[in-house]
Image 1 (cartoon, one colour):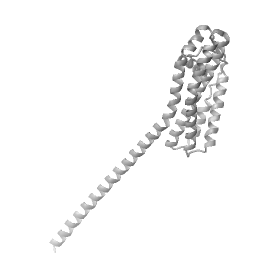
Image 2 (image 1 turned 135 degrees about the vertical axis):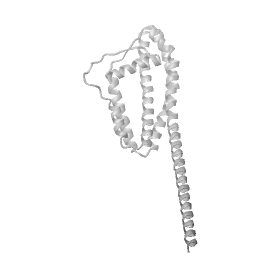
Image 3 (image 1 turned 90 degrees about the vertical axis):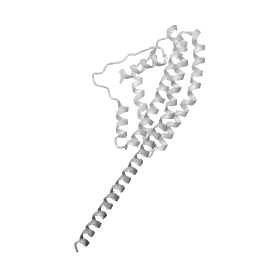
Amino acid sequence: MKKLLFLFSVLLISAYGLPALAADEKQSEEPPRNEALEAAQDFMKDLDETSQRHFSVLHGNYNLIKVVETVRESVDEAVAACGKANPDMKEALGTRFGAWKEAVRPVMKEADANVENMILAQDYAKPKEIRSFLKMVDKARKKQRDAVERVPVVTPEACQNLLEKMDDTQENMIRLLKATLVSLPQVMQAQDDERRAKVQAEKEKAEAEAAAKAEAEAEAEKENAEKEAEEKGGE
């Protein structure tokens, strides 16, 4: 998982314009465990399909929020390091990052509230059980993050790139957060469509069975009538 975390850091660099990060880690011969994934699978194993879908969306939304928080922390570290190494850029970086945070904050707040509403709206687990799971995920994420030493590259070129990419970073973070606000309605709509299709299929099946039964009864009555007519004709 250390390698995955470092890879994630590299992806943040390319996707969000963060200064490069140097990492120092010890290699382990044993395959790493993904404790968060194992816990999620264990949490869902006894849930029905609808509840699993809801929990997956909740968990995914929570993870997206945490991705944004991680980027915010990384940018904060990079801005501080760049300002220290390049005093002439400190004010510009600080001012732009302040605006970055102000733009992201209300959407982050809304996304957090959406996850909380999802926790309260479900009936397959106690809210405290889900919150306990999410705290465990946070603990595992912190453990993974702390396993890699992150050292921002603070050359003037890297710090200028950070400043220039702040617009893109801000836009990408807001887009990620807004995605958490529409995912649940989409899932609920899909579930409604699925339920309606199931009800319609059951209705059509019942109608077909009723029609077949009526046809069989009519055929039986016809056969009985013909039989009775034959019997009367033979008297």
